[in-house]
Image 1 (cartoon, protein in one colour):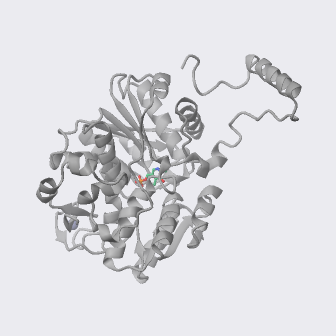
Image 2: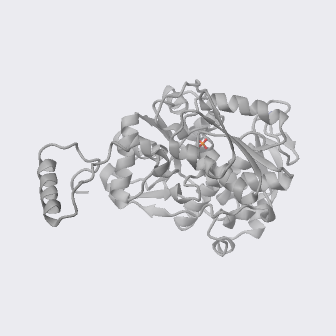
Length: 425
Ligand SMILES: *Cc1c(COP(=O)(O)O)cnc(C)c1O
Ligand SMILES: [Zn+2]
């Protein structure tokens, strides 16, 4: 059973009954789920969590919905991998990769949707909807299919094929908007006010956002009930980034871990970097941007949680970085070639920003770090399709194989492009 008891305004602290609402009537501040942490502490130990399912539902006591409404397609409890080869390549002593590419629809969005759809069912909604940069649409469509609910997903018209087909396959009503994500979101806010649907990132956003905390819970549990020195996570609306930190703090509040000292850093693509740009300018007030980057899953020009992300940077002594699209591709390749993990563009943003923050000294060599890899690479195959080495195309004869191999060896000593992984790693 859930220990959430109210929604609370993040700005003025006014409380509201749990309902499908998202902003304060008095100050228009965003609403956040409030919990009874004493009750959670009294009912939750490391052992009760460890005895739970190997999904995010092991943290049910900290989620804002009752278990009987869950739609469980296996989200969460993804691997935390010791990334020694990547660490060496970028100059860190200890690095872990939180591999959220292995979720049911290959992105961390399954976490937020699992929680949002459970709460929507508890409220009695019969249809799910969302405004999406791609991954959220995939996840809402999949979970709605599994629950037998109607589904309406809205996406911009410039998305990768993997993300369009990756929604269509679950047979939702898929609406493609001629415009950017920010246009999609504006339309959806209007639709949400007249249709009786649960828009996961609009009217049920307070519950949706709570799902991201499970990524923080898992990092702490998988490190042996402690937090790392540094976390680097990608930022679109800034929600995931802030909720990982909230998850660490709550684990401490209910007595599961020591006080977290983690520095939290955020990663953006230069072509859509309102939060990182504000960080560099030393302000908590970002200026919205018109996105232009291959990292489409992060292309939110007017980020709903941008202000709170900047506050989290200030509070934790973290920061933010931004990288070019070329660096994003190098980041995808570096992760794949060192750790065997094929990430989408958002993962390339995270790895490239991590590398940059080590180079600039923002992250020290001896800081134990975690890179949050949020989506799988087969969804954004266009980004790297012509950046990988050509196959050796030969007839099925041994001598052709031998001569092709010799020719390839010859070629690689005479100036083919520099590999992403430095020699000796
Ligand atoms: C949505 C998304 C993010 C970040 O989302 P926030 O809006 O900042 O919570 C990161 N990576 C991927 C792959 C995503 O789809
Ligand atoms: Zn308020």
